[in-house]
Image (cartoon, one colour):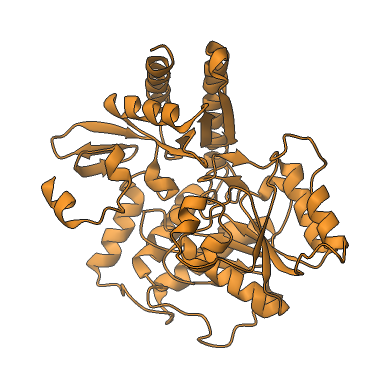
Length: 417
């Protein structure tokens, strides 16, 4: 591994917790170069909802490459883009009553967020954006300005402005009514709050610590935005594409955000791809006003179309995800009860789950114990205090059982020392 230490930047992170060289991957498993298998409850930070090298998606990709299908196309018309758009409309948007237009902003989630912020300001003529405590929206300057983590914000090197944080759901543990502070500032001409162009929010905060907003809280936020003529941006980069059960994390709240950001698992195969979905009346871009070289990666369109055809033609995956999520919730509740002195907290929705510890050291040690036993997990939260699970949605019941057993052993090994 010396080449990595000699040549790769010190900014690398995941490789520090998992110091092996991975070589192959299939389904819910990664294998290092010696052949040792690791059960993957990380899934590319949510970019691999359908597992590694999903056979059906892989075959569609191989067939496309084999016939010399266009790979790079900027925003030109291609067969691959047309097929994706038609499938996305017919099987995702139309069944949910969503009339969004699709912006291809670039390859990553931060690109989707930057486009959303830029468009909201263009449409409204206002500069300020409301974000939430513990939010994470990306590492570019605009996305960082609406991100909560102080370490990530500090790396910007310049002031991050034109954004104001508000308390996310349960931030005050129910000590005050939802949006009391936010609405008071909006109504008070002496509050000093700049009139916001938009509010940006995650249905479930992944990097922030697996904080799952209550559906009624999301509905209340949507109502507040409508009353005050504020655009609502829903960042579904990590929690979309079925992570919480439905295709979109906000579906069960019965809301239709003005703008939706998607990335990570939208390609289905781990190929970079992002979408910014916008209500038609917001489509005020001038041609070329927002663009990017890698916004037309046709292989991603191919695997995205195949993923939707395979997994979103019915509700089987949604039901399976919710059922497996409840299995994890039950197991985590058992750990909370088994170690009352540790004051653990089970969190999450669907197959985005977390177990919060008293501090980041404990959560990190549990993840290290799990790695030693062949399971990949990461930590999240402001201080890394949450053990975070993002397994592939396609994992089998046996794989889930195996993973939960390793977690049980790992928690025991740390908390009983």
